[in-house]
Image 1 (cartoon, rainbow, N blue to C red):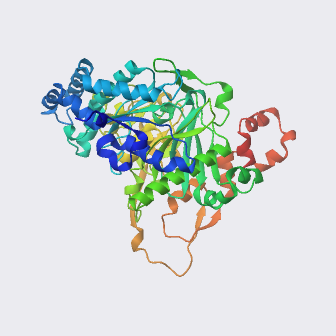
Image 2: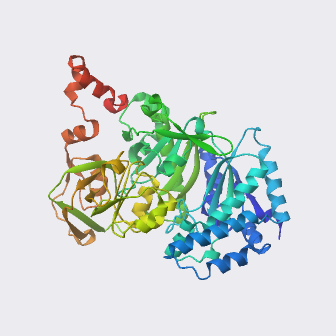
Image 3: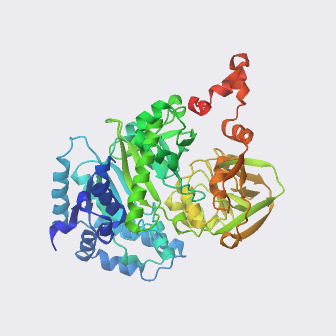
Length: 564
């Protein structure tokens, strides 16, 4: 066994190396090899390979032990699944690396560490060989360890990352997707950490995550490390950039473009609550409350929003050309608080809308209305009814009945088994790119996320209706009637008369773009002002004449939202 096969630097990898280093590491290597020269910042690192993982299992009794424990396991046997998972991961912790493998990791990290100062820390990320595929993302199924420092911590984190291939959620996901447990191997990436604990980070999609509309870039961000955004533990800022307008103005240069203050590609900026942030606390991390000033401020400037959007478009273009088909991307970004630079730290193919047949349109039409209990970010363009069930811990799965509506504060991958039973999801925290939102889309169920206080307003057993057919998700009291209408737009004849749409909400235009139409004929500006800004234009013109209460309401709005 050649020792060098245990370790491969990111710069020596490309996307074809997925069988050896997994989707996450292969994608990082692909971007470093091809996109660094285009000005995209990507922190480097190295991969502990699938060969190393297989060597670990074969040179110890781990492989035979895992095979024996998983032999008679059924995916729906959740109690047994948790027990087996715990035993396998304990076996990993009790089994040291073979000497040859440990020395390879030590030597590689020693060389890598010399590039940086003594205070540099690293992220240790799992990268499964069946991960980040176009049809199965495995997003969040395996563990990441942040702020890891020194070779002894690196060795421990690498072993724990390998063991995370056998968490209950990872085992259940493989069963659901039809992957054999011992045919999925795990590589581990060791990557220099960006000091976003001193600044901000988040996620970016190169399409509209709700409708699949391809001509925008969606960016979410919050203060501190990006895990808070990915896990949905904060309601982040949200930005939408129109690709075509950005592309038309690239030739001017972004700085010149912004300075001229012409029509902007940034078509929406939404301030998130951002109540907490994750920062370094060696070993590991800790969560702090944000300040009043941080909550009232966007985490990105316009320049930074457009830079990230341009990078997202470059990554999408590269992967689309390589795959010879449109490949929308799901990326993670971070801003370093020390050097002030933006970085792309991960990229993977988007797995929901890239597989969708857009000629088939399913329309949910609510009949009548009811008392509005909650509103939040809309996920799914559907309607669901049922009994609310507040769950505070995924271990309470035995109390949850299939078809109920899951109500909780946030979700993470441990919630997967409950989410698969739910007819809809409602959360207190999180945005459209949170874990709850991503899994709801994958499961094809509606979700209203970031409501603020769903677990306080709703009661277990209460009958509710979850409606995500609008740009804002709504939870109504009681069971409301609705109709499901299915259309095949490919069979609708094209009339000679140009059919154009009346639009009252900007986000609705993304969803309706897939209907046969010749564009937007009328935009209801009064509705847009009322829903997006919430302040009458005359109130801004006559600001000095307003009473203190109205002035206070206006002052709460971000200034650039009012200017826009």
